[in-house]
Amino acid sequence: MDSDVFWLAVGLVLVIEGLFPFASPAGWRRTFARLLQLQDGQIRFIGLISILAGLALVWALS
Image 1 (tube, helix red, strand yellow):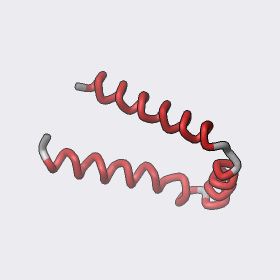
Image 2 (spheres, helix red, strand yellow; image 1 turned 90 degrees about the vertical axis):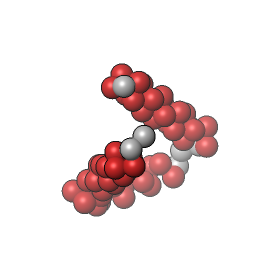
Image 3 (spheres, rainbow, N blue to C red; image 1 turned 60 degrees about the vertical axis):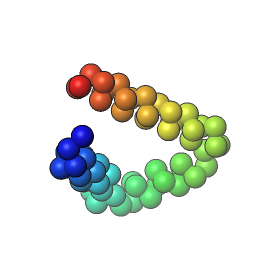
Image 4 (cartoon, helix red, strand yellow; image 1 turned 90 degrees about the horizontal axis):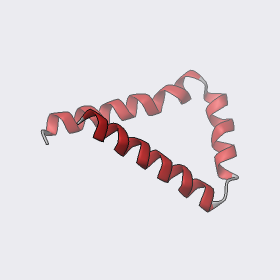
């Protein structure tokens, strides 16, 4: 894998991750407070779904 592509992907992730707190800090704070109330199993499930969606997207675009 070309290192430029890797760093481009990291940069895009950072941009996307920063959009919500930049656009709506209060909404981001409320969402984060709700996340803190979830059980460990619920957070793991969200992580698993995120991983699977990411892998499916990478697979589909490869």
